[in-house]
Each structure stands twice: as structure tokens, then as C-alpha cells.
Length: 390
Image 1 (cartoon, rainbow, N blue to C red):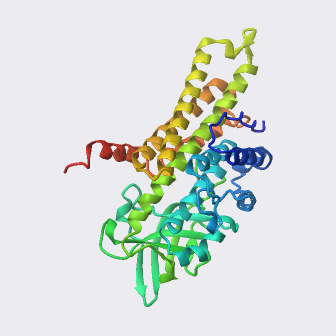
Image 2: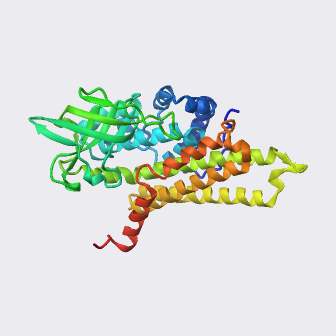
Image 3: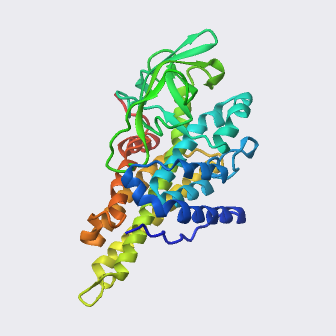
């Protein structure tokens, strides 16, 4: 059975332009994304043509300056676009979030010359980005990364392996964190590496339980040479850039999680109101009605949480704690809501004839990517009680 289009969410948007933008995104999602989602996920097919369409429609650079090809949209609006895309297909919503994450370092820390040279193609020229921080032996402990960049005249030579890279092997550019100095966070520098650089290669994509259409792969750097003009920020500033990127990226994951949860709730409501048992719709039974009510309440709470954090960011105020809270709550909500949606559909929910089983498999990874939810709790606790004592 094909996916049903999610019910429109009654959104609070700041401008008429934002409302028109959401209408455009819903139209693209319903026409170009949702109808093919189930078949393409089952086949493990990445919809590159959809990302080309999103780029030409101005949807891959929404939170960045129009001076460089962006959309001048506040995060409050950009995140709701992500939610709409993720509700149609998580591979697409997550892919846009990762692309935005990969573009952040250059947009926020690059020189004017770098931004003029690279950002227009990255934000609206059909390119697709990837973000390279994690490694096989450094996931949550990202500051212990081993990939090295050694200066050679006016170039850098990068050697090492990055792991769990979304768009690994298909990206047109990689934002790469590599060690250029001492051990620990102060010895890391950021680089913008072209996807066709000599010595760059990707392993066979991981075989995942969900998000099968989104390639996740190790990326190998074997003597990859990049000019110093592709160094982003100062030497040793890379880890600070990475953390700043992740604060914003976590909001993207939170929005995607709520989109996925909303899609699962829409399916559960549609099924419950149409399925007859004991002579009446199963939505008439109190136990199920209460389950749907709890699902909807948690979704609304998550949406309010990520939007509150986004408004702090848009106002130029600190938002790292709230971003961690939003990522934690929204992804836990997605896991709970999708699991409950499977329960509402009963045996049918466990089959691939309905999309809720796919939603449940996809929800799990959102509790892991861009900082596990255990890491989010550590981040929140540090803001509340200070760093851990040893």
C-alpha cells in the first residue's frame, strides 16, 4: 500500500513568504517525494534528482544569506521545512539537514573570498555536501579523532578514515575535521574537500535497518591534497567549529524526528478511524483514543521545544542547551510514537504494506546521529551543574 500524504500541520509562521514557502514544500513533498518513498527505500535508492529539484527551488540554502545564494530564512522557518520533508521521506529531510550542516562551517567561519568562491554552488548550484567528524574509533569522543592533515608548502595532505558519513561516496564536497596539531580539541582544523579529490574514496555503504535510501559509508583520505585556501577558520579552531555546527544540526534532527512522528500519527489516525472491529471503528475504543491523544501531545510538545530553541538562535542568544533538549526529546518522541503507531495497526503495522514499520525502523537512528541521546543528557547536565569533576 502506498504512503498516505500527511495531514497538513496548522503552523504558526512569521510571514506570508514563509507560508508560501511551506505550501511549495508540501506540494513538492506530495508530488515528488512521498509517492515513491516506500519503493525507493525498499530498493535502497538515493533520490539525487529530488535534491537537484530542491536546489533549483532554493530549498538547500534556506538559513543562509541570499548574498551567497541562500534563502535568508530564519531557523524557525527552515526547521519547519525540514519537518515537512521528513514527514514525506526521512531520507530527504535528513539529507537536507546534513547538507545544511556541511555548509555551516564555510558560511559561518569562512573568509569573504572563500564564501564568494564556494557558497553559491553549495547552496543553490546543485551540489550536495557531507560532514566528516566521526571516525571508526572516535564517535562520541570526537576530540580524539586521528585523521591527520600535514602542511606541505601552501597545501595540506590529509590521511585517515571517517566513519558513519551520510552521503559518503556521493557528496560533491566534504567538510572535514582533521588533526593538525596537539592531541585533544585544540589540535583540530576544518577543511573543505572536493568530492572528486585524488586519494578520496568511499567504502561500500553500511547495511542499515532503516534509511536504506540514504548512503552511510566510511570515507578514506589517502594523501588527499587540498590548498590552504580550503582551510576553514584558523588552525586549531576546527573542534569549536564542529561543536557550533552540531548545535544547529541537532535542531535539524529534532525537526526531522517530529516530521517522522507526525507521519506515523497521521497513519495511525487514518487506520483507527477506518478499521472496524466489534461493529465499530477501533478509534471508538478508549484505550486506543488515549494512545492517539498521547502521541499527538508529545509531537506538539516536541515541535514547541525545537521552535523555541530556533527562536533563541534567530535572536542571537545562546541555544546549545535547548538544542540538546530538543534533539533528546524529539527523537525519543519519534521512537515512542512510531512504535505506538505500529501497535495501533496491529498485525498490519508489522508488515511493509503500511509505512509505520519503516517509520519505526528509521526513528531509531535519530536517537544516535549527531550526538547520541546519552551525550545530549551530558550536554544538558553540564549547562545545569557545570562540568563533571574527576
